[in-house]
Amino acid sequence: MMNLSRILAFVCTLLVPILLSGQTAWTLEECLQHANENSIQLKQEELKVAAQSHSLLASKMNLLPTLNLRGSNTNRFGRSVDPLTYEFTTDDTRGASFSAYSGIDLFRGFQNVNTVRKSKIDLQKTLSEFDQAKKDLELNITRDFLQILFYLELQKVAEDEAEITRLQVMQTKNFVEAGSLTQGDLQEILALQALEELNIVNAQNDYNLSLLNLALLLQLDDPESFKISQPEANSMPEIFVQPQVESIISEAENNRPSIFGAELGIQSSQKSLLIAKGSLLPSISLTSGWGTGYSDQIFDISEGNIMPFMNQLDFASTTYLGLSLNIPLFNGLSGITKVKNAKLDVINNQLILDQAKNQLRKEIYLAYADANASFTKFQATTKSLSSLQLAFENIERKYNLGMLTALDYNTAKNNVVRAQSELLQAKYNYLFNIKILNFYRGLQQ
Image 1 (cartoon, one colour):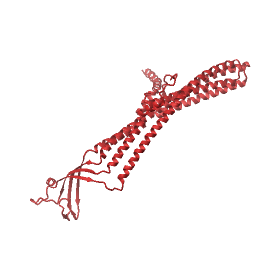
Image 2 (spheres, rainbow, N blue to C red):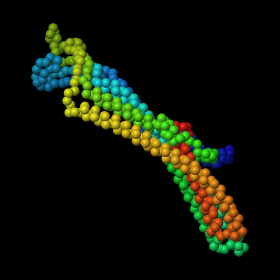
Image 3 (spheres, rainbow, N blue to C red):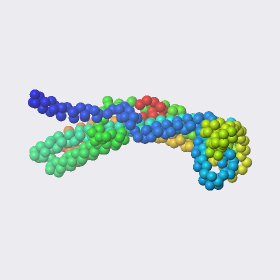
Image 4 (cartoon, helix red, strand yellow):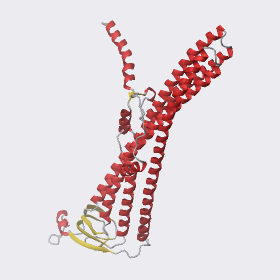
């Protein structure tokens, strides 16, 4: 039984790392979902939405009448005026008062109504800012994910080229021993081998750093064990197919939360202007209340004793109803200044919208041009790489026959490696810019 337990424990120690390693392979969709659920920035945006929802509720409640209760107990020493009998006394006295009062604004230049409308707009604006933060986060994660794939492919290219050179080093050593090539040729090949081994190390470092960067962006507890699941190879289309750039801009202006938020900013500032203008108008309010009190200076005339507490509450009670009118005539030009500043805020928010549209147009034009240029570069590099590979194969055959020097071989191979790197750069630059354009168009990734 003890042996069986040890065997099971040993098997578990072998399986746990395998299971854990399988859990750390993340797809792009899983990265995006995790970020949406755990991003601190998005949680902060959610808090802003909640706070603005509370502000909206408060503005609605401000339309309702107020209702408050008040109570107090007072001990007086020495000469004083009793608040219920209005008589002077030099004795120490004790009294209490209780009241309930309510009030409502009948008219305040529509300030309360416009405040509710402004709060609704501000809530929509906060929601649009949340959506924009979400889209920006998704775009950053997509960019980093594609960068990892780029370095992964670049690392594979470096390893494949190093393997070819390793075999060539062995072949060159045989030629040197046979006298077909010189020791200098061997040194040239060894130098190329050292360079390509360094390229592997650099590619691995870039790959690991890009993995770490994405893991930190996802706020993972164990970033060093983070791995991505490599998708199927992204094939490049034969032709660059995208709507005209103006069509993309039109779609983006209808779908981009930042543009919608800027438009809502104008509407919110317009409501603020109406609120400021409303403060210059007369206001009417209605107030009502009930109050009573107790004093040890109130006596029952029939009995000559201090009137009982409960009797005093009825005896001293009073009810009031009031209507007040307030007409602002001069308050240090504060109201007029608020109106002027509110008008400036409307103009400023219009400029913010114009700036957001200009920035959007700039980003789309650059992404469109970059995608088109990357696609063209990919097509041209593909043809160039094909020619360079054929030339390299021809040079390799001649080198193996001792007809060329190691310098010729190294030069030809370096040209192939450079073309492969440029091909990968063009490919992933194209894919990322297409992602950007699709984000702007509101398309699902």
